[in-house]
Amino acid sequence: MDSINLLTMILTIVLVIMLVLLAILGIMYMSSKMKKKPNNTAEQSNTENTRINKKLKTYKVESVMDFMEFDTVVDNMISQKDGKRYIMVVECQGINYDLMSEVEKNSVEAGFIQFLNTIRHPIQIYTQTRTVNLESSLQTYRTRMKDIELEFQKEQMKYNQMLRSGNYTQEQLNKELFELTKQKNLYDYGKDIIYNTEKMSLNKNVLNKKYYIVIPYFVEELGEDNHYDKIEQRNMAFSELYTRAQSVVRTLSVCGINGKVLNSNELVELLYVAYNRDEAEVFGLDKALKAGYDELYSTAPDVIEKQMKTLDKEIEQEGMERAKEKILQARTEKEKALQEKQQNKRDLIDELAKLIIQENSQAVGDDIAEEAIRQIEKEKMESEGGTKENVQEKKTKRGRKPRTVSK
Image (cartoon, rainbow, N blue to C red; front, side, top):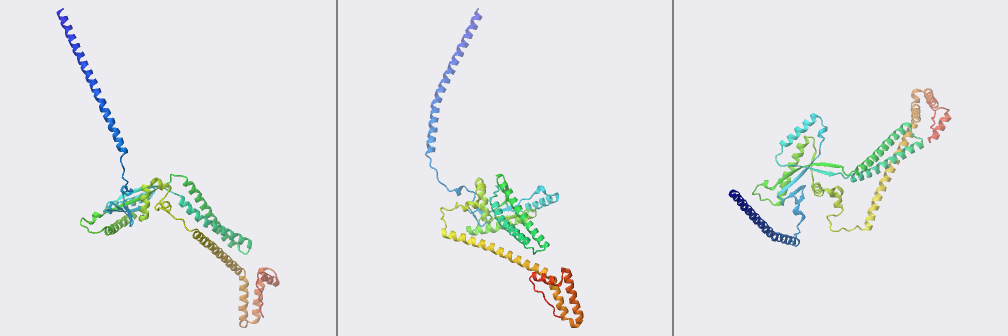
């Protein structure tokens, strides 16, 4: 009994201790929770103060050139870091390496190895993907097609005139028909090009890749103790960069790659596309400049001056058309005279032969001369068919007077 009572007392003491511990833990938990609430309130007040301060913050207006990676474009170079670095760009034309034979591929690789071995300065290869704008090409095609259509109409009128006149040989007609067919094929081919180009222009995914080699030059290369001003530094940078660029162009030509140094306008276009990729697809640099983006205002030209320019243009165009028409007419008349001379070739030969016989009648004898003349006239009548009077009548129809030979 004593042992049981002892165990009961021990268990009771343990339970009391556990209850006390649980009570202490509960009090500590409640106290920690009460402490967190004021902290959250302080944090919220700090957040609200920060928002108010952000709203009241003033922003400083800075120039957009501060965010550009270049200062200006001058002398076919891009100036950077306040004239401490200059860049010249070489545009390269790509080649179809995958379509080459093994011998051609080996030649290109050997040339490229030679190009890498000749480099004594840092370079950067830059690729720019542009959306092809076919509107300018379409305008050029349409302008050219007007001239081709005009030439085709002239050839057609000339051929129809030759058919109606009946004064041309079949060989001449065939020659003119060949020219007319050639002009018609050119006209049809031009129309097909315009139609296919217009269909391609509807596709906005026509892309073109351009490849560039960027060549830098640092003014530090002149030395730490150089006493040149900025203009002299720029001139020396241009000389050095142009020499490096020409060296790159020559070594790349061994690989079959054609290259050229970009001028200032082309550099501006390169930067414009790089910074305005989306706008450049719709509104190119040339249109942006024509729209006057770099002008504060524009004035319209005088109305009378505008009409005079239009009138001068019409006079020039009509003068060109009239000159072409008269040249074509002169050629037609000259060809007609040539044809008439060809038709009268036999008569001229016979008349010349008679004159030669008459001039030498004393040497050969009058009887022989008269007999020779009669033979000429007889052969002429047999070739043309009919009597002597018919021959003379045919000559009269041709507009030539028959010559009589004095005996």
